[in-house]
Image (cartoon, rainbow, N blue to C red; front, side, top):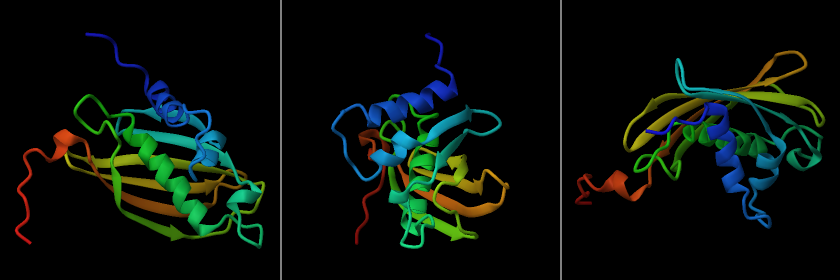
Length: 166
Protein backbone atom coordinates (compact mmCIF):
# COMPACT_ATOMS: atom_id res chain seq x y z
CA UNK A 1 0.00 0.00 0.00
CA UNK A 2 1.35 3.40 -0.97
CA UNK A 3 2.06 5.99 1.70
CA UNK A 4 -0.62 8.64 2.17
CA UNK A 5 0.57 12.16 1.26
CA UNK A 6 1.11 14.57 4.13
CA UNK A 7 -2.03 16.53 5.16
CA UNK A 8 -0.56 19.83 3.93
CA UNK A 9 0.05 18.24 0.52
CA UNK A 10 -3.50 16.83 0.43
CA UNK A 11 -4.97 20.28 1.13
CA UNK A 12 -2.78 22.05 -1.41
CA UNK A 13 -3.44 19.38 -4.05
CA UNK A 14 -7.18 19.93 -3.56
CA UNK A 15 -6.85 23.69 -4.10
CA UNK A 16 -4.63 23.12 -7.14
CA UNK A 17 -7.16 20.68 -8.63
CA UNK A 18 -10.01 23.20 -8.24
CA UNK A 19 -7.87 25.87 -9.91
CA UNK A 20 -6.41 23.52 -12.55
CA UNK A 21 -8.39 24.94 -15.45
CA UNK A 22 -6.32 28.09 -16.01
CA UNK A 23 -9.41 29.98 -17.13
CA UNK A 24 -11.45 29.02 -14.04
CA UNK A 25 -13.22 32.20 -12.94
CA UNK A 26 -15.73 30.96 -10.37
CA UNK A 27 -16.52 33.34 -7.55
CA UNK A 28 -14.28 31.28 -5.26
CA UNK A 29 -11.24 31.42 -7.58
CA UNK A 30 -9.85 34.69 -6.24
CA UNK A 31 -10.05 33.46 -2.65
CA UNK A 32 -8.46 30.11 -3.44
CA UNK A 33 -5.65 31.85 -5.33
CA UNK A 34 -5.10 34.33 -2.50
CA UNK A 35 -5.12 32.16 0.60
CA UNK A 36 -2.08 30.36 1.92
CA UNK A 37 -2.47 27.05 3.67
CA UNK A 38 -0.18 27.45 6.68
CA UNK A 39 -0.67 24.04 8.25
CA UNK A 40 -2.76 20.90 8.03
CA UNK A 41 -3.08 17.96 10.39
CA UNK A 42 -5.08 14.76 10.79
CA UNK A 43 -4.63 14.51 14.56
CA UNK A 44 -6.14 14.97 17.01
CA UNK A 45 -8.85 15.92 14.48
CA UNK A 46 -8.49 16.87 10.80
CA UNK A 47 -7.86 20.61 10.57
CA UNK A 48 -6.24 23.26 8.42
CA UNK A 49 -4.99 26.76 9.06
CA UNK A 50 -5.05 29.34 6.27
CA UNK A 51 -4.12 32.99 5.98
CA UNK A 52 -5.43 35.63 3.61
CA UNK A 53 -4.96 39.38 3.18
CA UNK A 54 -8.28 41.17 2.72
CA UNK A 55 -8.33 42.76 -0.74
CA UNK A 56 -10.67 45.51 -2.03
CA UNK A 57 -12.73 42.95 -3.98
CA UNK A 58 -13.65 41.25 -0.67
CA UNK A 59 -14.80 44.49 0.97
CA UNK A 60 -18.02 46.46 1.20
CA UNK A 61 -18.29 50.19 0.47
CA UNK A 62 -16.76 51.00 3.85
CA UNK A 63 -13.55 49.06 3.06
CA UNK A 64 -14.56 46.35 5.58
CA UNK A 65 -14.58 42.61 4.84
CA UNK A 66 -18.05 41.90 3.40
CA UNK A 67 -20.21 39.36 5.22
CA UNK A 68 -20.77 37.42 2.00
CA UNK A 69 -17.02 37.25 1.40
CA UNK A 70 -16.57 36.01 4.97
CA UNK A 71 -19.08 33.22 4.23
CA UNK A 72 -17.23 32.27 1.05
CA UNK A 73 -13.87 32.22 2.87
CA UNK A 74 -15.34 29.94 5.54
CA UNK A 75 -16.94 27.73 2.86
CA UNK A 76 -13.62 27.28 1.06
CA UNK A 77 -11.61 26.65 4.23
CA UNK A 78 -14.03 24.13 5.71
CA UNK A 79 -14.35 22.33 2.39
CA UNK A 80 -10.58 22.20 2.03
CA UNK A 81 -10.47 20.51 5.43
CA UNK A 82 -12.69 17.72 4.07
CA UNK A 83 -10.08 17.14 1.38
CA UNK A 84 -7.82 15.77 4.11
CA UNK A 85 -10.08 12.76 4.67
CA UNK A 86 -11.49 12.06 1.21
CA UNK A 87 -10.70 8.75 -0.40
CA UNK A 88 -12.04 6.62 -3.18
CA UNK A 89 -15.73 6.08 -2.55
CA UNK A 90 -15.87 8.49 0.39
CA UNK A 91 -16.16 12.29 0.22
CA UNK A 92 -14.37 12.44 -3.13
CA UNK A 93 -16.37 15.51 -4.17
CA UNK A 94 -16.14 17.12 -0.68
CA UNK A 95 -19.93 17.41 -0.68
CA UNK A 96 -22.36 20.30 -0.82
CA UNK A 97 -23.44 22.71 1.89
CA UNK A 98 -26.48 21.87 3.97
CA UNK A 99 -26.09 24.74 6.42
CA UNK A 100 -23.47 27.44 6.86
CA UNK A 101 -23.94 29.42 10.07
CA UNK A 102 -21.72 32.40 10.80
CA UNK A 103 -21.45 34.67 13.80
CA UNK A 104 -19.82 38.01 12.96
CA UNK A 105 -17.99 39.46 15.99
CA UNK A 106 -15.69 42.23 14.76
CA UNK A 107 -14.68 44.07 11.61
CA UNK A 108 -11.69 43.38 9.38
CA UNK A 109 -10.37 46.26 7.32
CA UNK A 110 -9.03 46.15 3.80
CA UNK A 111 -5.35 45.21 3.85
CA UNK A 112 -5.52 43.32 7.14
CA UNK A 113 -4.49 39.69 7.29
CA UNK A 114 -6.85 37.05 8.67
CA UNK A 115 -6.22 33.52 9.84
CA UNK A 116 -8.86 30.82 9.57
CA UNK A 117 -8.64 27.53 11.45
CA UNK A 118 -11.13 24.89 10.28
CA UNK A 119 -11.65 21.54 12.01
CA UNK A 120 -13.78 18.50 11.28
CA UNK A 121 -15.87 17.81 14.38
CA UNK A 122 -17.82 14.82 13.03
CA UNK A 123 -17.85 13.01 9.72
CA UNK A 124 -19.86 10.01 8.58
CA UNK A 125 -20.70 8.41 5.29
CA UNK A 126 -23.38 10.97 4.46
CA UNK A 127 -22.93 14.07 6.69
CA UNK A 128 -20.03 16.13 8.03
CA UNK A 129 -19.91 18.91 10.62
CA UNK A 130 -16.97 21.32 10.35
CA UNK A 131 -16.31 24.37 12.52
CA UNK A 132 -13.99 27.31 11.92
CA UNK A 133 -12.75 30.49 13.54
CA UNK A 134 -11.42 33.64 11.91
CA UNK A 135 -8.93 35.90 13.70
CA UNK A 136 -7.18 39.13 12.74
CA UNK A 137 -3.49 38.26 12.62
CA UNK A 138 -2.20 41.63 13.88
CA UNK A 139 -3.96 41.45 17.25
CA UNK A 140 -5.40 37.92 17.47
CA UNK A 141 -8.97 39.21 17.87
CA UNK A 142 -11.68 36.67 17.03
CA UNK A 143 -13.71 38.27 14.23
CA UNK A 144 -16.07 35.45 13.18
CA UNK A 145 -17.01 31.84 13.83
CA UNK A 146 -18.61 29.27 11.57
CA UNK A 147 -20.44 25.95 11.75
CA UNK A 148 -20.70 24.22 8.38
CA UNK A 149 -22.73 21.07 7.72
CA UNK A 150 -22.06 19.29 4.45
CA UNK A 151 -23.75 16.43 2.63
CA UNK A 152 -21.74 13.82 0.76
CA UNK A 153 -23.01 13.66 -2.83
CA UNK A 154 -20.70 10.92 -4.07
CA UNK A 155 -22.76 8.30 -5.93
CA UNK A 156 -21.83 5.66 -3.35
CA UNK A 157 -23.03 7.83 -0.44
CA UNK A 158 -26.73 7.37 -1.19
CA UNK A 159 -26.83 3.77 -2.32
CA UNK A 160 -28.13 2.42 1.01
CA UNK A 161 -30.41 5.32 1.75
CA UNK A 162 -34.13 4.79 2.24
CA UNK A 163 -36.16 6.95 -0.13
CA UNK A 164 -38.62 9.35 1.43
CA UNK A 165 -42.34 8.73 0.84
CA UNK A 166 -43.05 12.46 0.81
